[in-house]
Length: 418
Image (cartoon, rainbow, N blue to C red; front, side):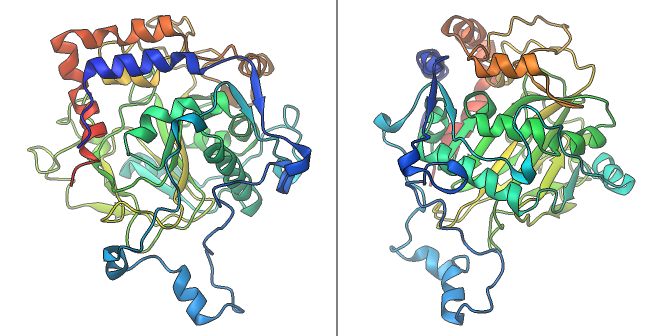
């Protein structure tokens, strides 16, 4: 079992603060360039599992591509498709895979794409607390995200060290857009902002925080999302963009319908006991979504949900997701020092309680990205400083504040049990 104390967390985050450097790094070696100008991945991320059966493929081959059965999971031959990076493999600073964008988009110039939702889809989100939007992103966009993810996993960033070492995921990195230009360009130019502004019935969308997540090991039990950045529940909209087919046996997110309206789960809680008093009206109303490449899941931050991984924690295929939280127009900055929410707000942006959330640290992506915000990101000004991280995490020192973090740090230890 992994045990993470509050003090250890402070040391880890402060020590790793030096991982962000304004000097850019590039892996664009013309002699090794692969598809779209990106360096070919070392981790075999290109070896995709087919999402649809090829009629020319033999039945035996198709069986080999199928998700593992319970018998397979018990076999000692099962091996992870992705290995944990060695300490010396981590990179620092800005990274740019140099990917060509889909649909003839010119990075930094083209207007963002659009995608029209129906009123019914928006109402489903408002009533159920979650909505599944199928096929938002076409195969070109899916491949772009896979290539960006492949480059990131092959060139792991130091900001992924804490999450990956915790064994929560095979690879997980917060604020991926800050260090990897391919993901920033995705936010600037894809239809994501347009989809989310319709969901929030708002005229502006900013990225509050995001996560690149590859293979959640044994998954996450029932929980709510409180790592949404410095915003309120009602200002936030959670999103998932899936790059792979969800296996039939596991990995499909499950939500408690309407649970975003519950008033019994503490705001500081991460894990949720769905047997507790007050959740009787929700615990039997399960909504399961088997997402496919290019789909979006969108939900209210308070909607209770879970994801079950394979019983042995070994993913032999990929489950790659780009997710996070955006905020609506008019959002005000919420200082969350002294609570677990501060861990998704460690930047040196200088905003104070009640300020309008307008900063290059929380970039606008609808109606259009801001040129100056993008330039600040590209210059390395959007980062994290040791002083600010130490200041924001100083609340961990006291017992009362430590108790507030207890639920969050259970996440780091509980996933390694069994």
